[in-house]
Length: 318
Ligand code: DON
Image: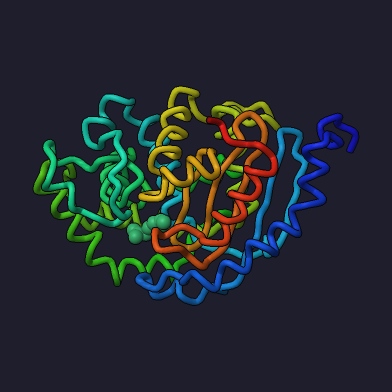
């Protein structure tokens, strides 16, 4: 490789320091827990930590358990939001979900009744993402899910992306809270049609099986405002990527988004399987997996690693 970028100080420093930073952050797993409310997720290795970074030339840096597969869970919500925006436009989408952080946990339905209108506060909490699932174009849940999968494959440049069926069934069988939320949304006029059909689309996109490499590749497209810098292919309109990235800053780490904005300062989205998708805008796509979660549902070692990296590399966008 001969690109000037590859030999820049920043890339060299990352190459040299990342394995050490990763091992220091890995220790945090002792303070975390693997998600178990979806029983299948509890099988993940609690002390795993992996990171994959890609730059605009297609150079990679990896450290730790980057071969580990895991389900996207809430990370998928960023991309279903993008697809819903592309299918319906901004006005239709924001008629059904708001633009504000909640300060509550990701599966809370507290504010649905507390504040009028009774629409979910934002598309990244469970209630909001369920409402977004209902906005995906398609004649049946199968067709909608297929469109979602194809969209994710396009953005990850990975045609083999598919579902983890065991996690899908495990979530569908243990989703009483999400199911009650969906019925509540239907009663509020946010959801139309069959609640089980909407939830099926939601459970499926949460169970898309991925790696830190896929997350980094998808993040790179967002880091370059929807146009893949490696191929030059335009995948998502810039105005929608801006919306998604703004939500990632304000709501992407749920009720830890404020602290994450101060300590790390990058748009990011976490999932309960331990994934974090983040980016250095205009520079890198980053995918992380670390299944041990903190009390807010974010990868405890992953957040620690990003905090170190952002401080050392001076990455905060603020
Ligand atoms: O609906 C759920 O609870 C999961 N499928 C997704 C939640 C999630 O990933 C929250 N993220 N930290």
